[in-house]
Image (cartoon, rainbow, N blue to C red; front, side, top):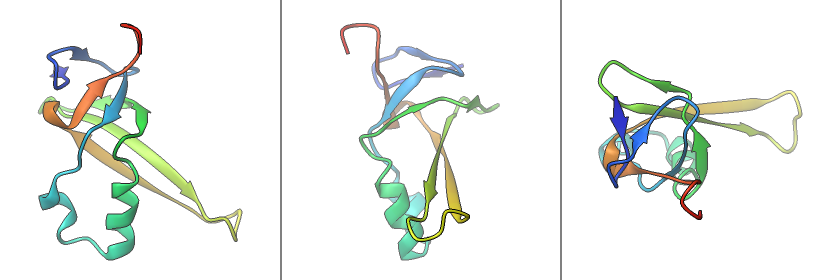
Length: 91
């Protein structure tokens, strides 16, 4: 079971805002991948999986503007302090 920073339950299909990406995750990435992950901060995603450790997974796809055939994706496991449920209570 997973929870957000406010203790709200998170399930597959729940919309969450990414609050932060741990530095430890980004420190060994190439600059372009680090930049991609940073763009996820503040964005809203739908949880696509909850793993056996209680981490909630989101993913983002980028399509290169020059080449419609080229795209890339990052999946990100979020802990409670890294996400906030959006929707429902007036959001």
